[in-house]
Amino acid sequence: MTKPKNRYKLTVDNQLAVITSRSGRIVLPGRFVLEDGNRLSYIVAGTARRLIHFRGIWSLKDERTLQFTLFETKRHAGGDVLYFKGTIKAVTPRSLYYRSDGLPEPARAGGKPTCFTLRGRWQADEYNRLTFLVERGSAQYDRLTFRGTWETKHNTLVYRYTRKSLKTRAKVEQSIEFKGFWDIGARERISYVLDAAANSSFSFKIQLESPNLAGKDGAITYRVGVGIGHAHRLRINTIVLYGTWKLGNEGGISFEMEYGKGNYRRIEFETFLKISERNTIGVGLKNRQGEDLGITVCFRRTFFRNKAAWFLRGSQSGQDSRIEAGVSIPW
Image (tube, rainbow, N blue to C red; front, side, top):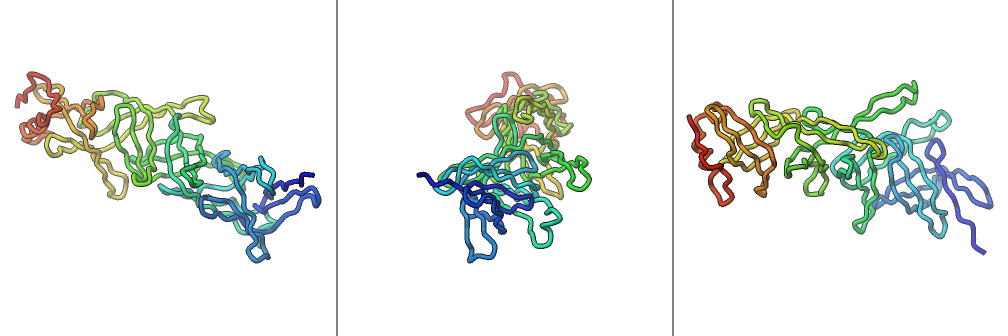
């Protein structure tokens, strides 16, 4: 005869309730902890560190609810879901910090909030939604998908969502700010890099608002479709990267962006001349691999400050020169 397996639920104050065929529902006072590989365990209070280990999958029901779906084991029935209601308090390129909401009145005297620091990395999915890949070991990951929308503020990526206040029940806007920098490495993609060494970055499918830019404006504008909810519909966002064009070495040009508090980063481009008029030069941009990005920046004479001839020589150097026939600088 097969022995019935335990089932599990959470109480309102994040205590573990065990449901057995013999004893019914029993609440075990204690606390949840994360072990190596983001493995969920429960320390039963008043014991010599008695641990209950769980196997399962992490996911995100919504921005307020982190959930863990249990696998079936010899002792545990599969399919039960543990719902942790709280707030994502902070993010880093390799982690996500979660803290449960305030405890209900009966539990406040001796209870403590549940806190997790999940380890992993960030990326964008096929719908340009932000996702966090939770490490499980052996190159396996669970996926937390953020189904709201994101935007840029002072060149910094910010995720925004609304939630209900526990006290007033009114809707409150929350935001999560990601520290990183932008990179333009392909014609139809831009990346927001959090940690290059950890491969933690968001690569978004985008469309240029216009392939022709005015250098004096100091802005690159994109349109990006972001999946909302379960990605059945798209919201079109306009993303504007603000910066200053700088003349580089050997015919190169860079776009210098400020990320707040004097933090500057440059995107470096290779170039080729496309058009030349009496007072302007149209410069085509290429990525580090020499591929055309489909962007032309038009600069006025004052941008080069008597270095136009030097820039032209730099742009013509190399075997991949693409200067159009007949181009000259009429200054």
